[in-house]
Image 1 (cartoon, rainbow, N blue to C red):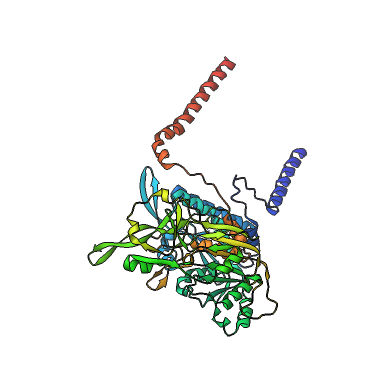
Image 2: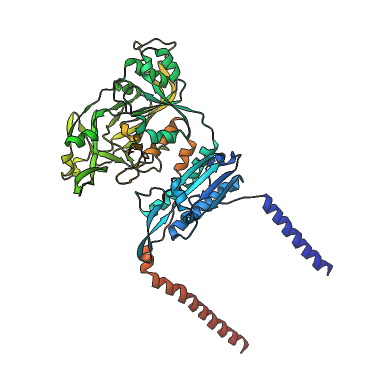
Length: 546
């Protein structure tokens, strides 16, 4: 009897010990093929450094079709992974139906989606949003990505794939402090603030921003150069006036001292507004005085225009309904849509980028590493300038055989130790120890200034990358933000974007067509197995005890 009780006691003590060990030693295993639940080093670093409580509210509670239930489950599992690293992360799922008006007031717009069930198509309204809050900072997170462009399954796959970046980025913004400074160059007819307002607002979440006017170089060249060297990055957004030698030397020495530059250059004068007034406009080269500087760095922006069969649309008036003008959308080959080749962290997993009246770029051999970030499609060609652009071409039939000179570079990343554009030349003004060869640095040259320009509605800037007529969403903002992050060596979050997840979705049409077949299999097959088991069991029992 004592031996019996000692065994029971031993088992109980073993269970208690096992329970204690399991509560102190915590380990999770990711057995998925694509390692979707394995967090990147960057995410772990961001989450581990959280010192204050982070509150995450997810508005995906309620009854959803199977696909969106999948998004709900994947979101919950991802948040559980984050919470397992740092207990300061608190999250809860909320049913948005009771607070819909409040969410809309806070900018969390609902999404109308078509759902196919039982062979029928219906429409549902969901709020695919989450909010991340810490102290007095709050970030809104859209959980459904690519809502306007891809099929529903592709949207969901892309959304699930983007979960880690989305939450890591939001947590980073509400917990981190800004350190690096960006100058927005003014003084040469660059875009007005209202046209770059949305992107600057996005950048302001990560970096310090300030305008920098080059006009002062005329009277105080040394001070101007000294001031600009205090910045980590400068953005030159669609200048329209020629740069003086003093201004160019200032920008050149900024790069030679390790400063990063984002050039957004239109080398041809062509605007849709003037085209709309008369139906025709003259496109002609724009002399910005930068050709020799870029040539020295290893690129040449040509004075041509790219036309591409893979392009976006423009609105044209086609009539009137009562007193209201009727507009329709027409494909416009001078507005190429650039699909990423995913060859670099900057362009990984982004939507098509929309550019307008862009030029081709030639790369030159000079020892600088060059990466083509954006290029036109294979079905594109170039038009020399000066030339007449006419809206009449919209109605003309397109001949693909005329668009076979494609894949023209439009955005190029340059990395290395650049040689000064004033190497061996007389300097426009005197400075102490001008650099003939620079420190290691990076720059991105894009042959389109409008890539950064948001549209305007009722005097207010719209979100960059959104077509106000069609609500089509493009990847301009993501691409430019990745570019700035990379130039400033803030590459951790960019690399998370390259994570790929493969989600297998049910073929609803096939499932509906074969519903009866699988219902019979699921109901009759177990019954048949049970009946066979019973017959065999009775037969063997009778034979054994006969």
